[in-house]
Image (cartoon, rainbow, N blue to C red; front, side):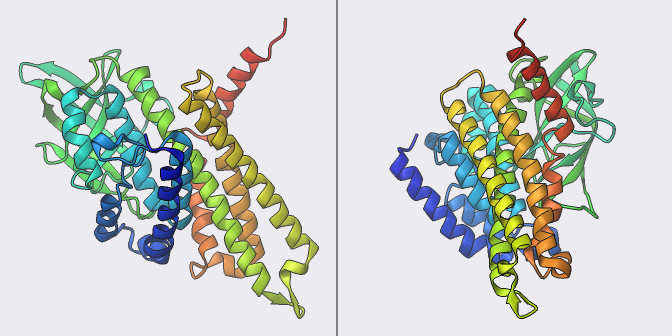
Length: 379
């Protein structure tokens, strides 16, 4: 793991990279519905794709707090670009790092770091969202390995992924498999008309009697829930929490510039008390969300048993703050906030998605409530 000085240098370099290479193209990516391959290649050169993974696998070895701050810098520039890092580093990379075999780690992680292999996580289905235990994609064991059949949906970067981590069920057993995109029986269908994540290559994945070898099982058969899914979703939520901070901060940055330049009644609108109230609340909420994320990051670094629930709290709060601040940013911009010539229109759409992915806000509330009812009960 890098020391704090080196990690701070990486963070500053990432900020400059985002300003130069990502932010100027964010609208282009959103309108075209795709991330540019040349950007992905540049990010790979910087080892950004798997920034949280150890250096021996091609990552940057960022500790949880610096990985979060890094995620914020990328996310402020472009949510879909941040989403690529969330998938590569947090969902797929961290899952393989903890549960993959030595062969999985040695073969796949360096290729993911170099950008030669893009991964995707295939859990959600047309009829199954939050209820991970209810997956309908099935697997059966044969003399050739395993046969998978089913349909996945909402897989970020599924449209360009070289392989997927697929969650499937056999009776009451849930397992996780590495499925190569070019395997016979695998079809991907890009999803169109999306509210947000338009450049995240979100796709449906159809599995029609897909045969995978025994060596492609992650962990042990039957360990998909809660172990492998728990790892993936926990790391995913941590990244999404920082994604919420990123959206909120990007909205503040945009509001401040606009309010200092926009005039109404011969007065800059930043001089109106109501506008100042909106910006003041936005700054306070965003600072609070960042503080929760930093706390979760420190606990994760310490491997504290409270880290998972604190990550859930951070994700819940930061995603709500992102939506609230984005809504206020559109209000500050007025009519201009409703057109994609200005960034807050896109940020408003992206903020809503954060309240849904990696567990809806309502599910996070229930999880936090359960924790509170146990922890703070004094008979």
